[in-house]
Amino acid sequence: SCLNEEALDAAVENYHTFVAKKAELDEKRRELLEETEKNREDAEGTGEEYIPPNIEEELPSVVEEPYITKPISFVVCADTLGQDRPFTSEQREYIKNVVKEYKAQWEKKEEECLSKDKMKKVTDAAAEEEFLDKELVQIQDEEDQQIEEELGGMEVPEEERELEANAIRVKLIGKQLSTGPFTETLLSLTSYKVIKMEKIIQAVFYLLKYQKEDICEVGTNKLFWKKAKKLFNKELLGKLEAYDPIGARDGPPQKYQMINHVEKLLEGFEEEIIQKYSLPLSRLWKWIKMAVDVRKADIIRRKEKREKARAEKEDLEKQAAERAAKREEDLKTNLDEEKNKFEEELKEWKEKYDFEDEFADEEELDQRPPKPEFNEEEFITTFLKEWDEETPEIQIPPEVVDEKDDDYILP
Image (cartoon, rainbow, N blue to C red):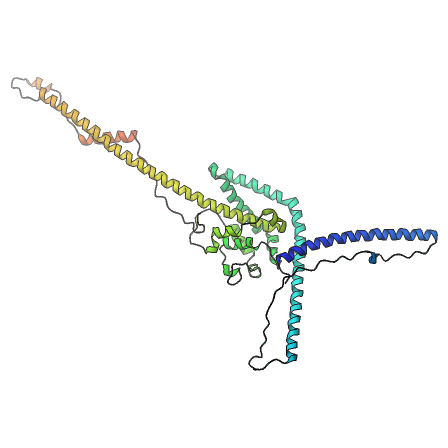
């Protein structure tokens, strides 16, 4: 079989070598033709007979290298279907010839498919190189400008600006892939029989909650491109554009859909190498890499905020308890002092004025100072009011509610 990554890479490289050698050969042919024409003209000028050389015999032949193949073995079984007899020698020979013909047709079809992949890769590479030179930088500059505009209208703490900027970038790249300049070229990957770096595509499927059974070989975790590419369509790109890495997630996903597993699928890739293979695939890789990073950072950020809010609540509750204790203590101290003061004043008043003197006239009795009184309830109310004004009540925030982030297991 020649339908594999190694064969495709070698075929593309050999094609470029073939084109370069053919260009050299054409140049050499042109030079020889010019030399032959000059010699012919010289011979005619002197009247000599001129026999031109066979240029094609002097030039080396240039052909493309054959495709790299890997041996694949199959067992062919034949059965008489209940006749309980051996095959005749003619029947065995016929079966062998059918198998040989099938093998030849299969190999021919694979070579045709690899040839199509090779030429598409060559054509795409040329178009992508032109796109890189003219448009990609402008697209990235527009991204940066839009991010700055959106951040300018948001109240974001300085330590969270980078995260929010990356979240906006995820949405912008998602839109580019779904309905923008990369849509058609990205979807054109489905025309390839052989796809490289398939783990990037597999990670995208899993992040968007596609089932393993729909994209993998039966009973394995290996992407089956022939099946998966049927789902690699505009519906997938619509889900990609709608994906929001910010916020809680309800409902535990399958283990292979977890951020932890998706992140492992993306290990070992380098943007420069991906971009050299396929520009739209490199943009898809950038989207999912950033989406995963933002998702993780958002989960960690919200967890830290909840922990901080709980700690602050506990601290405020402690302060509130201390305030309440101090309030009661201050009330008791001041109430005791006020009661003692009242009792002393009452005692003094009684000693001086609490009498019934038959010789005292009515005017003298009326001039006595009023008997001291103490309204405990009024004192408590007044004291607490003044105390609360000087020491405002501590507001306790509501209970911190846990958020579900079932798609990521924190290390």
